[in-house]
Amino acid sequence: MAGRRAVGGGVFEGLKTVGPGSEQVLRAPRLVNEMRSIGALNLDLDDLRKLEPAKVLEILDRVGQEPELRPVLALAIWVGTAQACLKGSYWSPSAGAAVAQVSCSHFVRPISCLHPAGKMPASELLQAKTETQKIIAMAGCNPIDAALKLSDLPENRHVTIIRCTPVGDPRSQRRQYSNLHEDQLFFRTTYYEGFERLADDMHASPNESIKEGGIVYTSGVGVLRGPWQEGAPWVDKPPHVDVLWVGLRAHPQHGEQETYAAQEDRDHAAAALDRAFAWAVAHGADAVVLSALGCDSSGCCHPRLQMAGLIHEAAKLHARHLPVVCVASDHPCHLEASWWDGFATGVIDGRPDPDPLVHVPAIPLISDKLLKKDSNLLLEKRRKQLGAWSAPGARVVRNSFI
Image 1: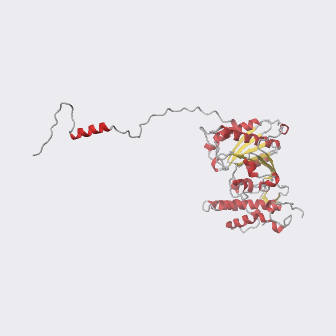
Image 2 (image 1 turned 120 degrees about the vertical axis):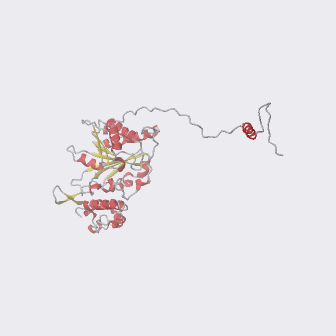
Image 3 (image 1 turned 90 degrees about the vertical axis):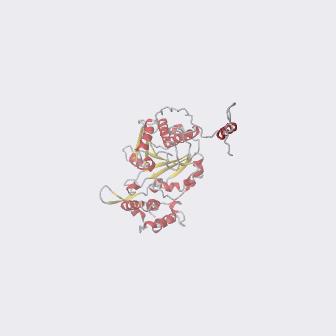
């Protein structure tokens, strides 16, 4: 049994024995539905760890003509990641042309805990750092890739990725990872192992906990894959990161100049960010990575510029404890420079005071409602037309026919 991980649940769910045999691993009961679905790709592979990045890119080229392949490809990448976790290894191109075997058996299943709504960490857990805070914006970069870059620095950062979903969204309980953009945390990392066991770790319903304003913190997540746009290549030196899950309101009403119409919605978002940063620091993070939270992504629609300002305010509030705050996104909604540049400026420098609104006075318009005419005036007009009415003293001349 050397080299195997003792696991109860997760992808081994449904097995009668405690640990799987080597022949069972590639088609574990948890993977049955996904293995059946990815048959549409005609890969002729049981071991999806061997799915080459070039093959992934080839399938991506076909997605334009066959869009139904997009979710199937996401499932295929996830199955390969799950099998790597089960087997404890995968193959990755090293610095040269050779392919090296990389061990990931040291990544135990991520463990999660719940921080209930309204609860903040004790002050002694928020230790001050000597570094000056840096706020970074990475355009066209997924938060996972930003975490990879920060983890690879000489400082060896302890990175926390902040993930958000709409409060009360039933998708928060799903166990199928088929969205290439929004499910990257599941099919590129070991986060899915902890996510599928959240209820057991927390002794509570994850969806209800997020709905009530709680924060779910998952430690020890391994990042195994690179960007799917590059074929989801395996990472040579997979790092550990943490994942913090927080809920935001789905569709708060927008006010003028990209603000919240209701102060309550603004306060809710600000409090969620403050608590997220505080708990990340309490768990030992010295770098936080997040996307444009809730801005036309993750099922939310928050005002772009005010969200950027709130992220800046939360970062400055924890400047003594948090050396690095990084915003990064490769979501299609955020790729336009006209969208991202204003957001990034607001995060780094704070949202500037908007120009005062100049309200133009209302312009009176001609009413399109017809006014009812006076009946006496209409009668007089008709009599004039018939010659039956004249001014006093005038003689009425009538034509006669004999």
